Length: 382
Ligand code: SF4
Image (cartoon, rainbow, N blue to C red; front, side, top):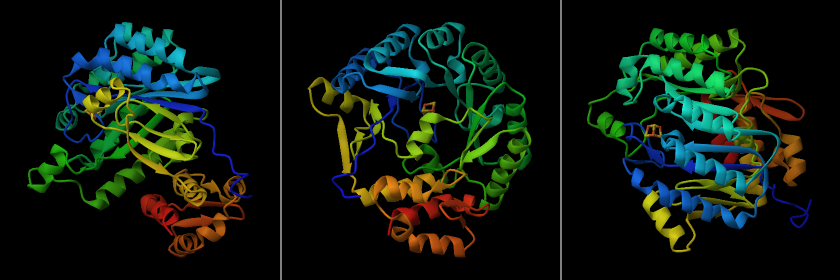
């Protein structure tokens, strides 16, 4: 395939970033603005203005994330959802996800979501244990989280829950309790993340000055292995390094990311991949608003991919899927022979027992899943 024959994927997904939160949790490094609800009106206008030039594309998946989308008032949330329905044409059988925090889940908000076609809710539960939730500076307790899951299951149907493990001082048995609690609730999808100390966050600072201590690596690995085992026993299939789902409930939106399918995006800090260009909007909400209001681009960084770079990205993101990636198919789709392009990375990973190779596919071994980031980086960079 010559570069003239190659066509960048036409996006079938869109991401909208709502930056508002009640307060900023100490570990969070997302593009978030706390205690500035006075900016909501300007934000709604800016999103509409940013999306207008797209010309109402047809999409399969729409994801509203944050921040906390459900921090918006019922009225603002309703107007955002109405506007998005005007800016995108959702195909039949669409997946429409909204992130939510348990403390915002009330009957009227769930009704607004359901009435506007939201059919998947992703709840930032993180834990069901009061001590851990307080340490993570979350605004809900375990009872509230349970109620939110049950109410969401009744009104929306398809519920995903995020949980954090390896919080300071957490014992393996504490984590097992969180998993057991989650598994007894009506949810279809679980995302589990080890707590990370991101540079610039209060948690990072606290660890740097000895006021907070992360768990040792061996305990973290044990927690991860227990997660895989407990969820498998309950029919939750491990389908991506951090994600588990019942059959038929994998996140189609996230799979579009991992398969490099292209997606639109709007909002502060939102990243899009359209026509071979990876663009990242300015992370500051006020700068984002100012730029859009002045008729300027909100993009802060832009990276034009080469075809080889794109093919390598497909390998690097695809390897995070537990079933691995059909390297032969991606080679055909991109016109880049990934078997040759990534030969050294593949041979090294297979030699070290981190990767399993078949005729057409590569996938992480059980050991390799623990080193997914490293294997992905080797596939990405020659
Ligand atoms: S609620 Fe979520 S997005 Fe908001 S500050 Fe906390 S971790 Fe960050």
